[in-house]
Amino acid sequence: MMQPLFTVLIEGTLTTSPTAGVTRDAREYVQFEIVHRRQYRDNTGKQADAKPMYFDVLCWGDVATRARNLSRGDDVIVEAGQLLAYTNDDDLPALKLFARNLSVSMRRRDAHPGPARPARRADLITTADGEQYTADAYPDTLTDRERVHH
Image (tube, rainbow, N blue to C red):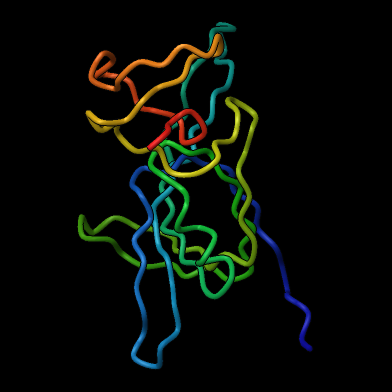
């Protein structure tokens, strides 16, 4: 087995939910875009934001199967072994990463158990005290899968 020449690790936030697909030879893939934002101190000592960098990520096989559960806003760390430079629709240089491994970054927030889904009117929400309310009492709240009882 050939060893990779290099490994790139990029931490970023998903800008869209992953899109799944299948190739003509029945290989499953998932693709999504991440944005990497970096802060630094300028010459006056104030925090400044660097220009964001966008990356297209392409996952295959088992990594693709697991990446389907990600959603927009999730922070991830992508281990890429292959990079492909191209020009995007706006004629700007872009970079596509072929993910060998993918993990959820918990630097800024906790990991989630799966994709969030909006509450349906018939769902019951159970509070930590064991009280139950219908989801329409909290229409703006996304329910947690573990708290919803059908």
